[in-house]
Length: 99
Image 1 (cartoon, rainbow, N blue to C red):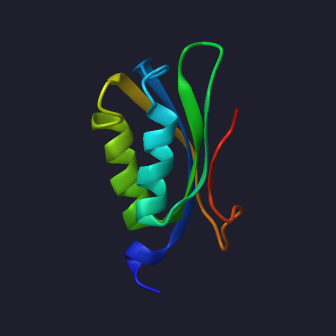
Image 2: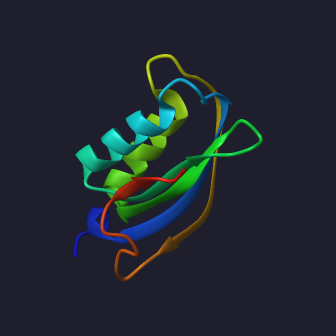
């Protein structure tokens, strides 16, 4: 298995204007496009949080997207990533929006 194919899992929380701007929908679409699995949800604190799982190269791409792009109407102040670890298999079969 090549370096970029190692499976990893990482948690994220995105701060800024990220609720009410279709951030979760765009996050789900971008993740699915990259073949990642996991979930995304709004928090009571006005942030968006979730988990990404997949090949390290694709997860890195998604982290950059979460940090710099987001949905067209969003305004990202910062992105926190935590609990990154190598995994042997994916814990999810697709990427879900959690209500």
